[in-house]
Amino acid sequence: MPRARGGNKRKESRKKIMALAKGYKGKRGTSHRIAKQAVMKALRNSYIDRRRRKRDFRRLWITRISAAAKLNGLSYSAFIGGLERRGVGLNRKMLADIAVRDERTFAALATIAKEEAVKG
Image (cartoon, rainbow, N blue to C red; front, side):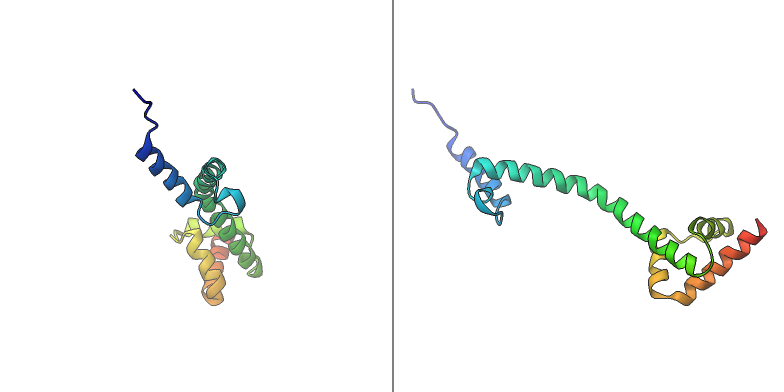
């Protein structure tokens, strides 16, 4: 009896890999063996970077808040500490957006944080 080589299933899995590798340069987009390695690496990196994106954005927000707080005569930690003691429930994403788009509102928040820093 002849050996079955997994015709349709094999073709389907190869088509799936080649579809994921569509647009890759050189043999990465045309050769199944090399495309499979490239796709595996790309999928691993995208998994890792979905987690890294969260860290990167938080770092960016903190940098923006820190710069705006320094313009208002406060350090980042004094600003955040003052807001937390006062019970202002804005997260870092919102604070960074306010710092970039609305300087007057951020200055008012900085004043609140300064008052709290003077008390505490």
